[in-house]
Length: 373
Image (cartoon, rainbow, N blue to C red; front, side, top):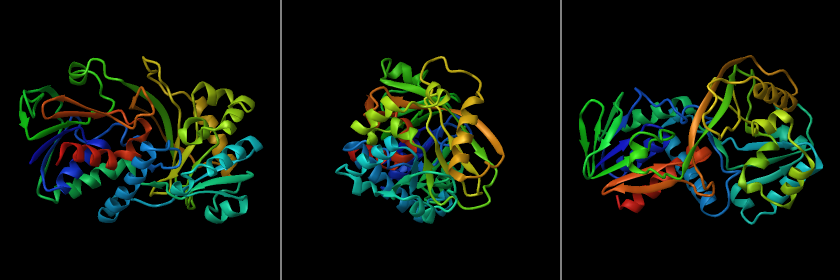
């Protein structure tokens, strides 16, 4: 079988991986010379802790299993089962963490509520003040800026994979074929369009009423910390953002403990993970209204700096990169992904939102199973 995959972000690349794993030939087409979108501009977190129960959690847990297996075979992914800690400081925040522990699926996530001493034993870099920390053992991380290159290298070694960069697909031709902007036609037994946040042009022509929106965020990366940050870190504002924490305790937190004006204005949470070089990737904000701003603003970075320094109990290393990114999210945020057959033999897979890096291996596996590969 021959599969044409359009898009070389993590969702597209995992579809290519699934096809090659099942013995098929793959041609992957990317409009940039290499992937440059949301798959590189993220935390690299395999984030199980905040996922909603049911299908979303099942997808995340299966993806976590697949990531670990792929990471063992492709060491350059930088996969590490580092877990996460969410330090909490107030009674209202602790109550949300305790409600999470009471979930019927808490054990599946590896939730534990740690004392400050226990949290610092797990992550000695946390020298700041906090009252407890919610630990999620199942969270993990990879290196987002190099993961696609590592996966591509492994796929090329199979002998059944071709990568075509610098080609934008402009048209679906009949069944099972697309034409790129070089005028070349690429045909196969199946075409998978994994176009990420590119929702105009061809995608709009194929699905004019696509129930997917674009979301913009700001992030930053520092110089090396100079010590190991052994887990990913979130703050209590992440409770407000992730569906796993919905509870009466969260309602009380939202009613009685407001976010700072900056965090509220930019719909913020703290997520932080250490990169292989020791630097810290820190974010993020959320912007939903179009047209997006074209610049990055400083106030969110100042807020994140204060939150991080409060947890670390030390100054943040020099910030060396700031950036904005855009990803695609289903308008019905309870949906893990939008998967739609748009022509005979042609499928569109997009809209995982902030779950793309976490869930992509399982999303691709589900596509392959549905198509009977």
